[in-house]
Length: 428
View (cartoon, rainbow, N blue to C red):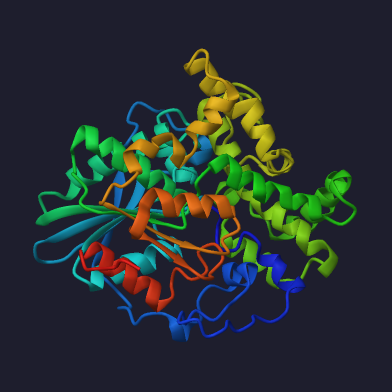
């Protein structure tokens, strides 16, 4: 669920990428952080078409919603459709946390599958502002059951938009990071509703427990210079340096390109970069909190009934949102909402529901599922990696390195993904 450049600034603290021992796997970057930051060298990516036949779909997924004026630019849920001229299987792909429908990882997955003869539809993450505004029924992302129902409804909607234009032989489903975890829940929902009858479902670098994964990222803040007690001073100093690069109108669309541009400007000393890891996560979380609060008129960050206009400055809301931790969001906003919806819901039971363990009975031994993961993915514990092996059995492909999604674009990984969907033998 972590974006590729979540820990971009870490590169200042790390040595040059080390070359892995010859263990039969050619991805060369050994360190988890380096791999996550640097991704795959271009020479080791598969040869893919520069352009594919695509068009963007705009879906009015929540027609009853009156969109706040500050989101004037949001005309509907944006999905990208890559289509063949002949009958072919169709793969739905779900992006990771904060990803839009044209994130770089979704695009390369789409191109690889298109080249192999598939139709493809990419969907943004339910944690992306476009999804929160245009497709989330509650406007409060993070609950796997509700987010998956929203995703499924969106898939049904976009399929209805294009089903008269293409011939589809069968349906498949995939996702990466948070999108992978959500894909498991979407597949379970499809078992009940049968709109697609997915033949295969591929989970790439999934989080086993959302709460656990995000907690491990949030804990990175403890590494800031001076320790956790200096968080306030550190944040204020960092955020003040962001100001000249921050565009008010694009607050809810802060993405990896923005953060990487900040990194390249070398605004931070080496001693500050560990804290910037946590700050990067906070900025992405801030976009979720702001968009959700405005859509729901909850009064959490923006005063209740305050109507923000497109010309209003959002800098104060940016600062407030960025100072809110994941635990603040969870305890003060997220969990209380769902507790009201589900009387008697305990905090422990809610956290457990945000996990693959919650649907373990459905997943265990289910032959339609496949998993790709990495031994050194820092959003997973060793016990969680073992759990994935036990849960999915021989269809669990664990690579020796790659960090979190760093090796997704590596040619061997891409070939494995394509072969999985082509029903070829891909057992380890």
